[in-house]
Length: 280
Image (cartoon, rainbow, N blue to C red):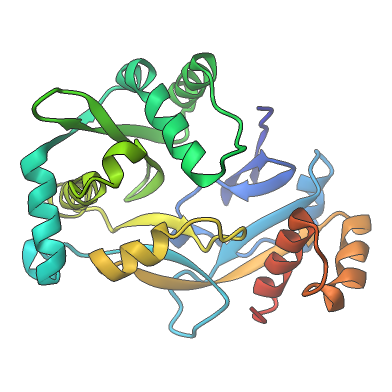
């Protein structure tokens, strides 16, 4: 995966990811950048700059991060969720591990999760997982931490999480679970999320944990799950997008027809533009 990084006037580190420049910094420190700064980034590659600012504004917008900024232990959970967390922790050990542990035990978990998303999804290889962990270890701007869930009776790893520490907050970047265990009423995710919330919010006293921004593709139910079960909330913000000139023209022409365009990739671009305009 080809990535480039560029600092814009020392405000933030932007990363070129899938042809879009995206800030690597914690969202509560992001600021709106100028048109000239966007042009400077686009001159180095990519098709767009995507940035957020006014984090956790009191005015609802069409874009947000899903965060949790306090930990109330079991008392904050519903009776049903408490029982699910307790059953999870009775069945599984949840602990922080090394990247090497993910390399050794993560392949089955990743591919089981990918298959549950899409039966035709391409499976990852051991080499791809190894390269991902090595790349994360080499990133000096972001600290990665790894968690795994182990069945107590067999010590088999059944779920994992990859988290990024960004100054005084933590993003739950990726959570995967072997579907054979996720659907057997032992709730591996519940113990994992509960223990990570405890560690980062209570023990480390970080400002908040975050499951990322609002999904553009809307392919996952994890964010509504976190809001419903673990009292995560929406931290509204403003979405800034600057396009390469030719892509901007395409977006402007196609936007009125966004609800009838069948191609999923174009749908996602137009949905993101609608979020920028606070129209979605």
